Image (cartoon, rainbow, N blue to C red; front, side, top):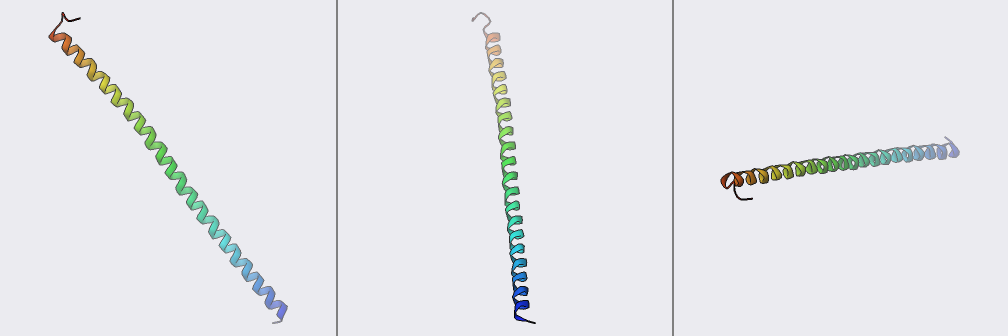
Length: 80
């Protein structure tokens, strides 16, 4: 094998390893991005669920207050 053939062989091998490294880094970046997106989706979902639960809790508090008011009116119907 001549010297120029050996140099070409080495440059092709380094180009192959560089492309392998680039592909690997690209896949790692995609995996990290997917993880971040799934975390963001989970956070948004949990935040929306919390808001819905807060609305339900407020509704239950309002109903409880209404029932207490009605009960106190039944105990003392002339208190207005």
